[in-house]
Amino acid sequence: EEEAINEINVVKEVIRIAKEKKMKFALDDFGTGYSNFIYLRYFDVEILKLDGSLIKNIDKDKDNQIIIEGISLICKKKGIKLLAEMVETKEELETLRAIGIDYVQGYYFGKPSSEPVLRAKGNVLFRVKKFG
Image 1 (cartoon, one colour):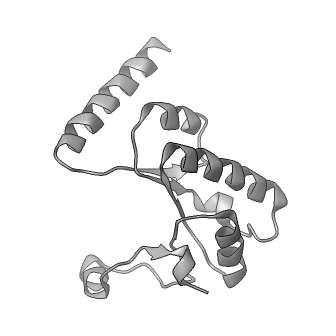
Image 2 (cartoon, rainbow, N blue to C red; image 1 turned 135 degrees about the vertical axis):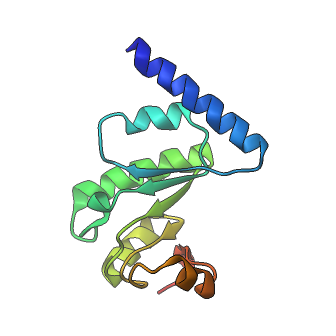
C-alpha cells in the first residue's frame, strides 16, 4: 500500500510539472481494472476516457447506463470532460447523448486512421451535441 501511494505521488508530481508547461491529461480505459476511482481523487486530468467495454450495447444495458450516469455526475462536479470510446451505433450515440457525455469516438464515425490522415481531417474528437 505504501508503495502504491509513493507511485501516486510521483505521478501527481509529473502531472503538476507538465501542467506548468500547459500540457493536458486524459485518463484512458476508465472502467477497467480495480483502482480507477482513486485516480479521479488524486490526478488532475481534463478528460476521462470511458473504456469501450462499458459503452458496447449501452443502449440495451441498463446496468451500464446507471454506472455511466454516476461517472458522468462525478466528472461534471469535478470539471472533467467525459469521452466514450467504441461508439458503433446510432442507438449507442443517442443513449450517451441523453446521459450527457461530452465527446465520443468509434466506428460510428470512422475507422482508425494513420496520423497523416487524422491531421488532414482536422478535429477528430466529436462533440456529442453536434451529431445525430
